[in-house]
View 1 (cartoon, one colour):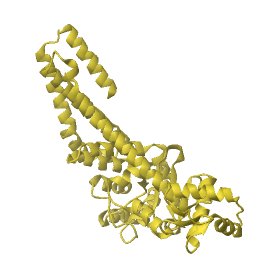
View 2 (view 1 turned 45 degrees about the vertical axis):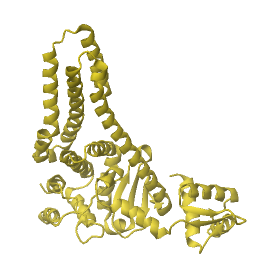
View 3 (view 1 turned 45 degrees about the horizontal axis):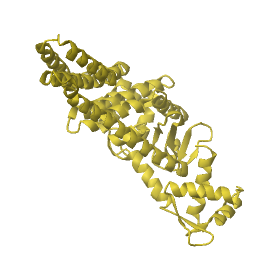
View 4 (view 1 turned 30 degrees about the vertical axis):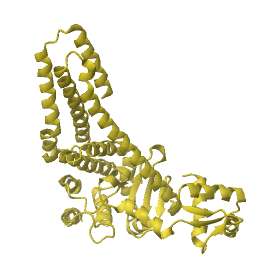
Length: 118
Length: 274
């Protein structure tokens, strides 16, 4: 996850924060207001990457082209958390969680350990 | 496995050329290999699941599980090859068809599972890029702005990333966080993902075969124990226990699906207390 990843996040944040579809120039201005100066071509490159990944959709009939988010930030967070917290062995192979649920019985065992050692 | 197949094919050639191996010996070999395959498919794994020592020796147990998986698959392929040879001794190439089909079936499942897991990780990484910020001090660690306390790693070889939620950072003291991170780093460094992938593929290849699912659950629990042991070198057992309770105990958001359906996962917690 290099700088390109961080750029994608900044551009996506700008799209999510905007109401409705925006052009690459709107995004460029928005990012400049946040103190990040980018060339328009850079913004367009990042946008095409985001489009390829299925995070934004573009309206190419408009001049300049307008971009909108496919799904809100909350939608994507929900998808991410679902793949983390969801059940089943499918998840186990994709990512490794520190701990899933601890049953009440197991929690009692652990609390006993903590009490015993003060 | 491929080595075994080529070996068998070369053996079968030798058989067809020399025709010195009596037919009875081939049948005997098929029966012996078949018995080994059956033993490794059922009684041996069941014994290992029921034993209590694997919780004390997770490294040894994981080696055994890998051995059982590899030897079980190979003996099954070998038995099929010998059965084929016993039925069609004059056509060794045709005789190898059942064995080759079974081997191809297993390999195909491994390939499909690898493809699926890689694709899911790719999607997950793309989401992480958009939704998480880099941890201010720790490399290859990202923070997601979520109140649910979660910590996990997404294994991708050199690009592996550890993800912590803001809820976790708020809930744990610095020592407990060290325990969590040491645990996750062990998963990444010891490539536990490859083990889990292999056993998931085995389960996918043998649906309706409960032992494969048990084996996968067993390996998943043993891998957690290894990662715990790694964390225990850096923090006291009590600190790790506190971290586990803070993240997984009931009442904590996101803890509503207990992993303790396998007794081995309970062993993970018991061995801390033992």
